Image (cartoon, rainbow, N blue to C red; front, side, top):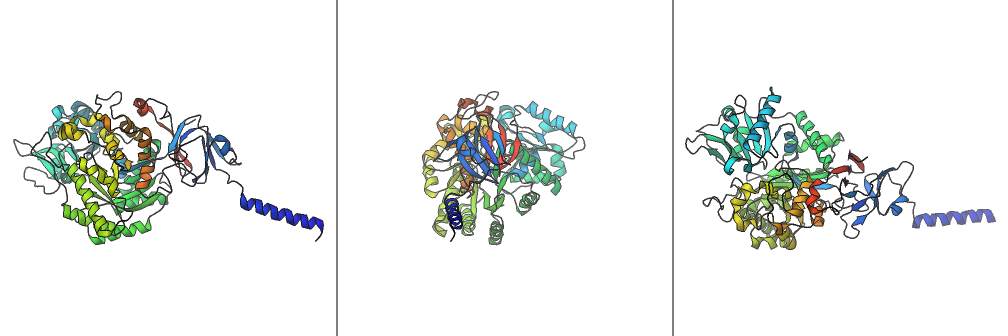
Length: 564
């Protein structure tokens, strides 16, 4: 072989060997540099820069380590030292309901009956052609002397059209006389089921308040939005979520029709959040129903739309005394609330769903309901054998001390909402449970210390705010914020900022079986990143609520930007 040809062959073999050992670095589509980035990765919790290739993170490190990933078409965003973190995973929402409410009367933050009446009156005047006045967000503590509202309170401002207002927690409706008349609800109306048609103690007439299932007596008469109106509402809700840094959410209720709305948005490439949906089931759910949901799970396990879980409503809420408690309410000694299902029926439903490979969410706010859910999960393990079920209990506003260790032992996830513990809403909650049970109210720290995994969310629209920053503030401070009524309660249940952030990021990812794809900023995971106006680790904890989102990146794409 001639010398030149032999040398060329040798060089070719050498180059092939070099590239096989160390292939050229993949050029990035996007670089985030000069940041103070909390990765959520315990092995490397902090970084300066991130390189994104297509929709995934290809490098996390220092600015110098990332520099080699720049190419001709690479976009570069200078964070200017700002704080960045993984995208927020809101692990329990009712997203369609919340989105629809964005175009209705907003009573969030109204602190008096007069303020509520003013907002309803103004909304009615601004929408003269609306057949119904609907809205949400009123708080029990806003009513004088912590009393329940009354239809006459609304008749005083709107009498000619029906009014239907949901409480901030979504478990109580307040209506005027016109709404009762249109729905045909009167003195002779009977309601059987979970909830109550509240009546005037003197006359027996409906008082204008409907609890839990009784809400349907009136809500069934409200004109339903069209499919196109629902889609437009979801688009509006998704824009709001992006502005708050929410890149994933888990929808904790719904049916196949609602799921189809997300399917359509995905097909149109308009689904700007990763959605995991649990479908609602109850006492009448059959094996065929469970099998249909299991079939949906097989069909929808994508990175943007997935299902494979069921949601059970086991009790109500503390404020209306519909949460199931082990002992009577402190302010109503004759009442302790009742669960919506018997223990036997709950055990049967949970075991059936678990056997079909479905994850189970159980709404349980009262300590009795929490114990029933734990018992049902323990029964399912005994019946079906131990598997990676990742059972969840939603809310857990009260819990018996003896039940706290059971969460870690059974591997049950504590899916909770720090925003519900806002001291501004404690005016009715606290007196209902009493001082002793309040010590384990929203027991984040006690559960964490016992080895339970925390998973945080908003429960939107059943919340005074969907903003996760407000939730983080509550979890870390357990006190009110400037401009709100003084509160400051149960400081022993505060958790660290690191724990709170994990509960809103990797905790949610784990709760939907997606911890290998998202929840931390690591090589190979989806590029879901949020940048904030203030560094949460460098400001006083009492100022956490002042931070806001300036940049949201989902799947490697900027979906919200305030950053210059």
